[in-house]
Image (cartoon, rainbow, N blue to C red):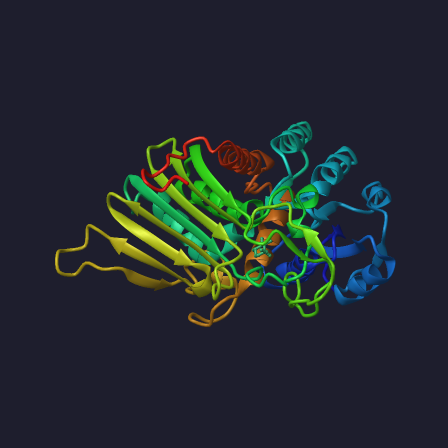
Length: 395
Ligand code: SOE
């Protein structure tokens, strides 16, 4: 039995992210030194039977279907929000008002207005920790890249090239999910995975995006309105079911300028056949470059332009040494981490912010800044603001 005081968590949401956070809550204090021992006291979901099953699977104390009742419970310290974006603001505002710490999945909200209300509520309760779950910040290779950039190893940043490529929607018969419904998800690929690229780019460089020029595309206008089979994000293809309109983007492409002068090129899609979860970023500066691809998440490439002539070239740093961020808590060098470890690190940092006053990253204010970029991208695409026809191609 742990002698550390318990930190009692209500986990809201039982889907992919709910399961991922549950794993992280159960693992964090077993591998990292924490002053408190997190416990999932209750799992909250809309469907009683499914939520009971999830509570058992997650090793939680109980299941509930009414989040409003749960956030008022005096025996709960933390509300962990793993539901679609249309619920984030309401649950967050109620939780902060009830004196609970909040961890909220990305993107922070479905609109800038909601995000700003969340920021204001968090700022009005500085004794509470309010953090947004951009989990890739805790991939050791990206954390190392950030340290190297902050140390000046890249010099002045000129280019940020970010791609987030998935393919789980490339089959037109892949079933409809809430992620394709604008009222629930806010946007499509843009907010789901483009948001990660925006956060990563701003966090790695320590700079802010100031202008964007964007196009969004929906390649498949409707999809089978039926639950797919399988463990994929939306399940496997369904044939012959009635179809439902897709109200979000399948792909987003945009250029960006940064306050510090860098140029950004962003490309996010869930239709890049063969690319399962290729979250990539390359940054070029006056003194060097870094390149990362989540499909090889344990390594980062680094090019040092100050190396002697004849010895220059990208070097592959395997980010599994005890000296590297987070890595020392796990396995011997070279044995590698996976997708779930970023979420465990996220819980570690969130808990330390509560129990030790460690920095909150990303704060709601930072996550709201990502939301502003998402909105600007949507506006730019909607207004076709800088689209210049190529002569001879007009129809
Ligand atoms: C689906 O595209 C998804 O699960 C995202 O919602 C996550 O944020 C990303 O980490 C993996 O892909």
